[in-house]
Image (cartoon, rainbow, N blue to C red; front, side, top):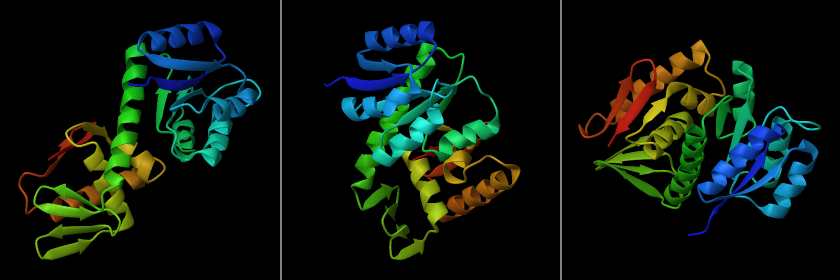
Length: 228
């Protein structure tokens, strides 16, 4: 099995050395850079499997780097590392195509779990999107047409309903944070968008009600779990 290549960008050299060595002991190959201005050319040369970008960097920020990388490759997973805690910074990271956002200080176990999760979701998404239809209990969900089939009955989903159902499916049996859904599908976790999410969850529950084996469970104070 080939090793995962990580492009890790960090200007705090002591932290960077610890993270790099820790990842390498877990069978990751790590290419490290501390100068934001050199990252994009290094990305093109190394062709990594995932990018881990500190936000605050000399010469060019992690956000600027991500925007440039996304122009070259819109599929590569990107995880931001930052000491910033403002919601608008998190939102900006997701809008630039970030797949995850980790606040400093963090544990190595958290970082590794998040890397593995982002890579798994990417793999699952690629596998699922190769199929025209997904089996959802007694339903068939046509990804391309955004249609949910139940025997002879078919229901056309809106774009956002379809994307929400797809995200729940890809993360089935796991606890999903409401904020992750809001940031990915709406761009921010405002009160207004949060109420919209409640409406869409209710709609999907209604669409799937004929199969008691499918359930979108609310985890109070956290989010949801899609039981299949």
